[in-house]
Amino acid sequence: MSIPQLCEIAMLCLFGCSWPFNIAKALRAKTAKGKSIGFELLVFIGYIVGLFGKLYAYKQTGVLAYSTWFYIADILMVTIDLILYFVNANRDRVAARA
Image (cartoon, rainbow, N blue to C red):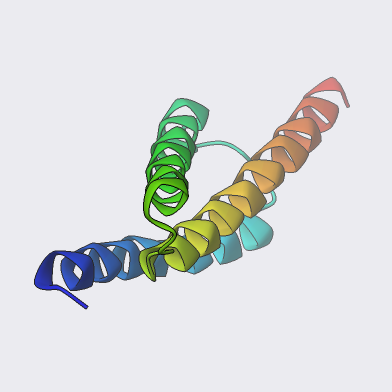
């Protein structure tokens, strides 16, 4: 594995470390207040583009980079956080009506 690949995996791991904390906070808070859906969507799209690049390289070379699995893990965590955003935003709307 090359230095650039190790650096990419380290970056994905370090970014990925923040998502479990964000998910736990969303579960505890039960509100979407203070969350930025725009930011989360940009991050999600960024991970999707990165994953696409890895899959495209795999199609060209037949070699699947190890970092592909870290993109998938980060995408799953952001997806969970996005789902929680919409669940909590709905709770906020229901609470505002009451």
